[in-house]
Image 1: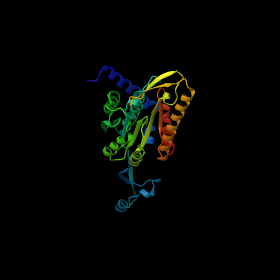
Image 2: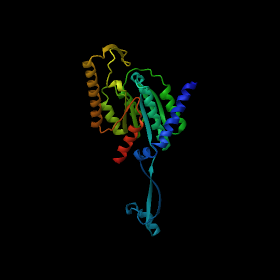
Image 3: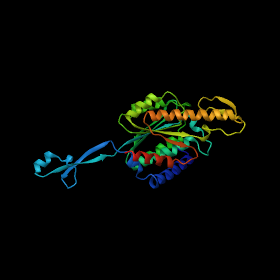
Length: 291
């Protein structure tokens, strides 16, 4: 039995994201993500302006007049949401956890997909794959996806992006659109990421929090690594410590961006406490302009 409070959360997210999809993202998803190819539909008599390369010479010869082949786009896609649910996603300092932000953006992408009659699937992972929801269509299926994102209690603590991508490659044999939603606090996954990107249209969605980039001056603070349970005490009043912390965060961010650029991947970067609407629409606009 799902608690009433969770049902309220699911309903609130449905209302918010459905409105966003209809009012802001309407049409953008369809123009950015195309179907797998063109499928033959019918032949009809040639009309002025038709491409002569589409003439069906066999049919034309039988009818003594030119006929052309008509194709329609095979629209249906499979969209996989590959979502990090490790302990580091239970962090947030701007009235929002990273996990909550990931849920909202995934719900928006899922409603955009089913609105275009595409299938949506879900893989939740930490230091191993924890949940796999096969791709399907429809509003009720999206609500199930949202429920899993909200309700799932992760068993693992760490992050293993490579194993999640390997699982994706096993269960998704046909090319699809994959949104990899994570804070990417992991190492040694570039090779598997490269393999997955050759099979799928893979879009990294980077979730972060402002305090992961810069610490305020608040004196002595105990910090707990949620993935390793290591507890350390730091002196944030030290400008040298704050500077080294910020420089390390910038370095890690730039290394990750360079890796994605080397793989010819364009990311969507989101921060807790900030709207994800503009980064998402900006990504859609850039991608559409390149088509």
